[in-house]
Image (cartoon, rainbow, N blue to C red; front, side, top):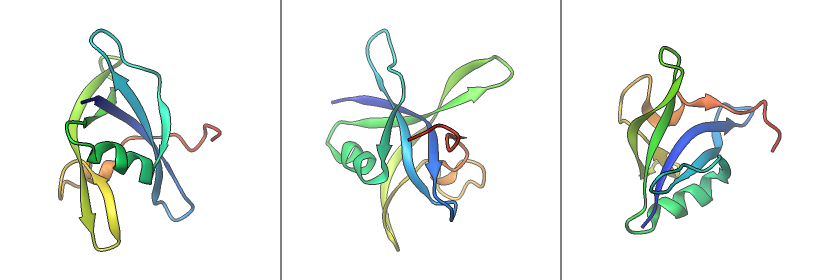
Length: 104
């Protein structure tokens, strides 16, 4: 059983998320981000007992805050990660930091 935080995403030219920034949570630490493909992220969260939440930068406190639970859902076009169904700002993790400026 593992706990993860997702702090950011990478998108393709069609604004579709292709990768996620995953952090492993230990008892007293959180790892640096590891870039995971969409399919690898789905496989990881489909393992029984593994969980993830979003990890959102709070500009007011200048610190990371734990956001919403992340789940794997099976949509019309296949499986994807979703954080908060039908919420315009946080649905499908599109609100997370866009890491496109970081080299793959």
